[in-house]
Length: 181
Image (cartoon, rainbow, N blue to C red):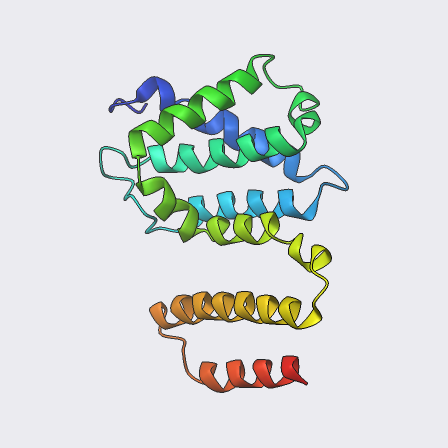
């Protein structure tokens, strides 16, 4: 019954969401795929996401995250989408929708990906090869420690925004000491 702007585009949300559900329950999908889909589902569940649902672009961000995750799946394991028994034009629809939502949202796409942690996750996945490529163990440990503190900083921000930061600093220090041992 939606009658706002981008109605034709936004009608894809239930279709994309259903496709993500189908893929999610496939046995033996890669953990990276499962994490990306979880991030998408989480975005739908959070009541105050990057663009409020009552605004003019309120559901475009939800469609963006769906199409983004599906585009990643399409790039990594297209067989998951091909085997889903969805519309035969699904692959082109995903690509078109992803491009269109990126165009509409512009720089807010970065905020959305950051909000669900996919920006950092993709960076970690993309750069994980350094662990195996570098010959210097000290460089490997320093890089991993840098990434860990970045993630702990993200966790601290999330917990602080929810008013749950008690004891967090001591927990973080304990984690660091255990890693350095």
